[in-house]
Length: 369
Ligand SMILES: C[S@@+](CC[C@H](N)C(=O)[O-])C[C@H]1O[C@@H](n2cnc3c(N)ncnc32)[C@H](O)[C@@H]1O
Image: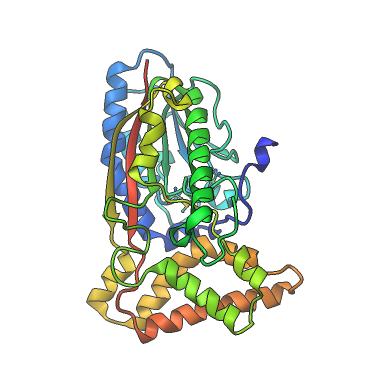
């Protein structure tokens, strides 16, 4: 397959910088990962033997706003006693909003860009998917990615009774698990080639944790079940067709710790043979910032107004993409508005328990010398 096409359809975050404005929780996750990144960097510096400049990547960066503070910390850490050039490659799928990324990185927005605060820092923007090579062989010191690698390279099957793999059963669940294992291996093998010997990856990915928790399912209303029951309601009311219902299958998979770890621990796996080793993996839950705020302001409308955009920022394109293209664009957008308005009304009428707590696995991986 042509490398540029290795990407499931319809995955786009909100553009124009809206992604970062709407997803405070994703930034919290990156802030939590920052000490892990700095520790990987310290370790790397101790053992680094090659390289005349530092090369870092931020894969699945969206508009780049959520990781600005992390990269500022990384550069600040190095610049205490290191003046080598630094190159940071921001990579996302080709239909990402690169205009927003460039504007945010170059300080043309309200976001606090770091570029002018340091000497000899170069940034590059790449439209390469993480299912393809992003960088030349043995050029990468530290690769980073947050909240991105749950997007599969394709939708391996439609899920008949749900919109997400967390609600899939039987052979459909198995088909997703198999695709996810292949995709995880692909991601790691490309990174194994890119990393310099001794290089590191810090990958922060959605997961199903040891207690069975996952995004939007940390107690209270299960967010994915709610997406599904609302979508089913539209089917029951004949607002959408059976095929439109089924076409709304999110091409995502949330690995468990064992699934993330397997190719990095199994001596027979191609990933292990390519030199990648798991240094550490830990899970953590970041509470939904909007649900936390609601506990203090207690205003259900304010909560719904703040919370819905964070959901829409990542799944609206998939719901819209599931609708029949025979419908006019305005009909499709009215239907999508109706769908989110239903959800909004439900939150306003009964706000307790709604929220999108983040459940992540935080991993440090090394390429052995
Ligand atoms: C939820 S956003 C995360 C953005 C940012 N890393 C953060 O943590 O706030 C997920 C990003 O992954 C990107 N993405 C999805 N599939 C991708 C792929 N195959 N290669 C690169 N990026 C991808 C999406 O375009 C989106 O920008």
